[in-house]
Every structure is written in C-alpha cells, then in structure tokens.
Image (cartoon, rainbow, N blue to C red):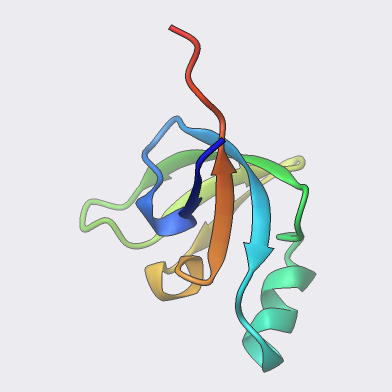
Length: 81
C-alpha cells in the first residue's frame, strides 16, 4: 500500500494511519482526536475550497484543516475495480 499525506487523498479513498509527524502540542492534540497509527479511516469529503477535509474514523466524522492533515501519513487501500 502506498504511503501518502492525508492532504493528498481524494474523497472516497480509504486508508490506515501510518504515522503522525507532528510533535508538541499539535502532535498531542492530533493523537487525542484518535488519529494514531493503525487506525482505519475514509475520506468523506472536502469543502469547496479544498480546506478542511472530513474523514470518518471509528464512529464519528472529524474535520481537519489542510495544515493539520499535512502531518498525517496514511497507507492508502488499493481500489478493487
């Protein structure tokens, strides 16, 4: 599975959190929201100007600004056509 920044993922894509590259307060806040390595998620959509991005993780929808999603690397599931 390819590893890409969350910001580069398209609506409808699914993946698993690979790594969170943020440290300090931002890193702690991202992990507190449930974005930890090994967690599956799917991209639900984006706002008209592409910021923020909405992801479905566990049993809730979470929105992240692009500058936050840049710190998150994901393993993208291959589409089965």
